Length: 108
Image 1 (cartoon, rainbow, N blue to C red):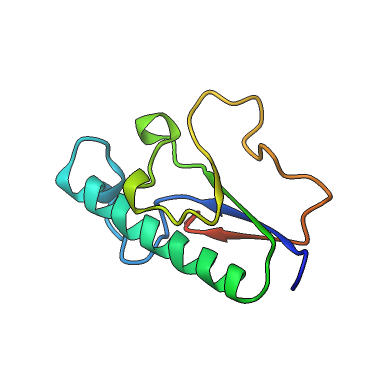
Image 2 (cartoon, rainbow, N blue to C red):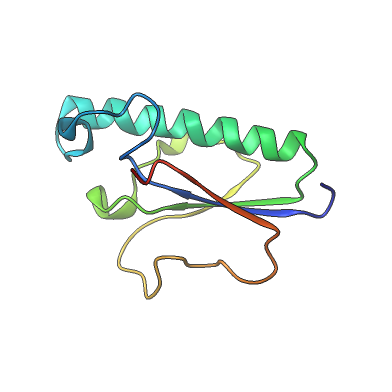
């Protein structure tokens, strides 16, 4: 996978062990825990991509709560670049024909 660019879309709904609405509601204790669960899922995907030879990984946080900042910054893998925050002109910011692979984590 040398030279391969990977684009990862994320959302809380559908992330590992995120199964209740309270987990996606800003301000709840469950929400903070869900953000950590999503971050761990994302980090595992990044490690897999890098271990497989990917040269560039972009992660796009699509969950709307907290203004599009739903990953835990101090826990994020430093081998990727992140697209976070709202508003955005395009929900698929940064995705173009130069990427070899795109996949989703969550988006339930």
